[in-house]
Amino acid sequence: MADSDQGTAIGDESAPSSTSSKGPSQSGGKTRTGMLRMMKDYFTVLFGHGLSALLGFLASIVLARALDKDGFGIYSAFVATLAVVAAVMDLGISQSIVRFASSKSVQSNRSAIARLVSGAIRGKLALAILVGIASLGILHVSQFGKDLGSEFIVFLVPIGALSLSFFFFVQGVLQTRLAFPTISIMLATRSALFLGTLIAVVLATEINYSIACLAFVVTTALGTVLFSTETRNLASFARKKELSTRDVTMKLLGFGKWLALSATTFSIFQQLPIAYALTTYGASSAADLAVSITLLGILGIINVPLLTVLMPQLSAIDSPRALKEYLNTMHRLILPTSVVIVVLLYALSGDAIALVYGEMYANATPIFMVMLAPFLLTFITMPLNASIIYVLSKPEVPGVVNTIQLALFGLVLLFLADSGDIMDMVIAYSVLRVGGTAIVTIVAYIGVRNWAGKHVDEARR
Image (cartoon, rainbow, N blue to C red):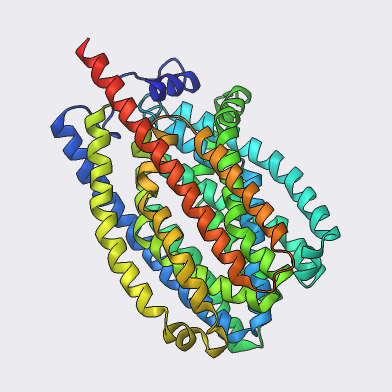
């Protein structure tokens, strides 16, 4: 199988080839045991992610009410920029490490995992320096950099992106170790630090968007450092054992080149509307868009923890039966909970947005309604679409689709350059997002069916 072959290649000679209790087995009993363990892990991460989402939601309310609308729009554009730069700094390495280190042949081999982590850290640091310098230069000469309001905010971008990139990398390392309670605490702690800092600043003095941006960067960096013990230990172990990391780094980047393309293009596509709104329609429109996206993020309360637990599990799947059990369980959770959340969000979409965030955000309601369908489709199809990368080893599929999606959106934005209505951009974005998600879902469905059929035929022989 592809997973086992790749796992052995980056492990050492002592990597076991037998099945491991960390992943699903072909036997019904072990599959059920794996499912029960996965459900326990899911509810563990759900608690931490749910608490993190709640605290983040409260932080957005504090900021929206403490800042003027333009200030909140600039802050939102700053965070969107961090997400894009962080994705470029990562180049798919954080996802690649989950993909490789979760293979059965690697899970029980600490040397193999240490080699992966050490190689990934070196690769990420080199990329971060190059991307950080490039981002400073681009922002310094671009109109968007000027729209961010100050040189201080521009200077914070590479620092914040580095912190955010390594925050997700540490989370990826914890995923490979199946340390889901730690992930849960990590997510909640970061959001609690940010909300606590904002409240303290608001009570002590008058807050502005520069202070809000600095608070986001500092609390993200602090959250990363507090939970990076396992990552540092593995890297130190690799150095003590004199484990070569060059080949491993190239292996991660080799698989990750498509993940890098997929993650980077999708991150740009997802964050570009806020940045474009800031430059084209003004900070006030960017603020309306940011409020809508914040509320739509509530859809991920159920599904993002599911994917966090599912990613390492998918990489260890070795039978059609196990894959079917996992996907069926995922969708039994996703579909009913998504319906409940959509009903709640729909109830919030009326006067509730203005009530919660303030009357000046009343224009966010129509934006929210248009973007609800594409966000919902993304979250519902998330487990099946993840199988393209973690079971079928075909990251080029979302990579190509996301690139085409971004290119089309760029052409649309050029066409809409003279439009004064942000809803034109929102509608175009929503249509393209639905189309891209639908294509990836269809390819994933066909691919999984073919993969399952191939394994059944091999078993019969």
